Image (cartoon, rainbow, N blue to C red):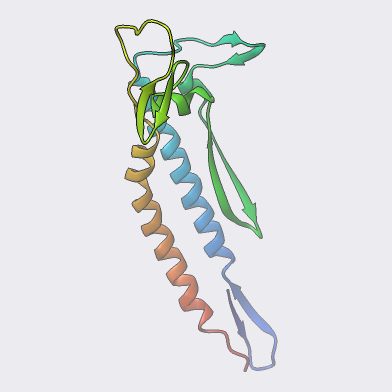
Length: 158
């Protein structure tokens, strides 16, 4: 934030407030874009839930329907962005579940029953979207914050 003063010592303008609004707008737009990309990725998953259902007394929704984004602010600037989805999305991403477990980075069958004809494989739907869209967010935030740093160097009292 930069504070400019006039010759009588009064404050002319306070800069930096607009930088935080611009930064918040960029983050909100980015998280919305991530959410849309994740919905597309989950639409490509052909196995799994195709509708909502009750499971163990809890409503489990289809993964694409459960995707939501959320941001939190501290001191007027978004400092946390979250993507919220059903728990089974993690199991799909890792390829684990009932009778399957991750061991040393690979999926291993741990069930003692007869081995089924199909086996589970990881279907990475989350990380690739984040990895692909993160550089764009970084670049935009660098530009905004570089301007804020330049403005902060103009702090003077006259």
